[in-house]
Length: 60
Image 1 (cartoon, rainbow, N blue to C red):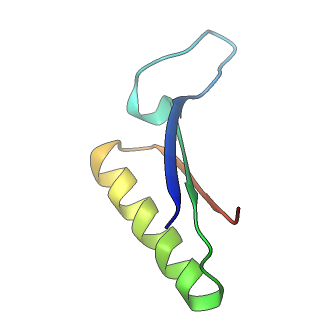
Image 2 (cartoon, helix red, strand yellow):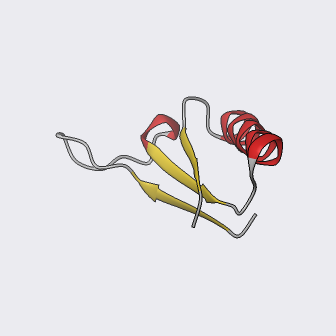
Image 3 (spheres, rainbow, N blue to C red):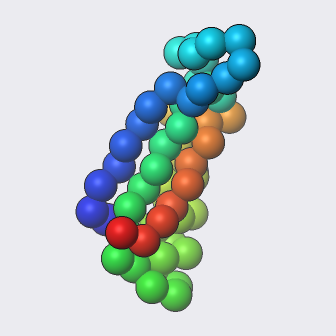
């Protein structure tokens, strides 16, 4: 994993610090099964901490 960023997601009614209003982006060089494993782990941890959080995993 290279980086993890977490920002307030923009919404039509403004920004909120509610868990589901967070936007988490995980950046990784992982490929294939490695990428899928990082994505699954990020989603699981994110949901444990912020239920309903939006987690996206991407390549740099």
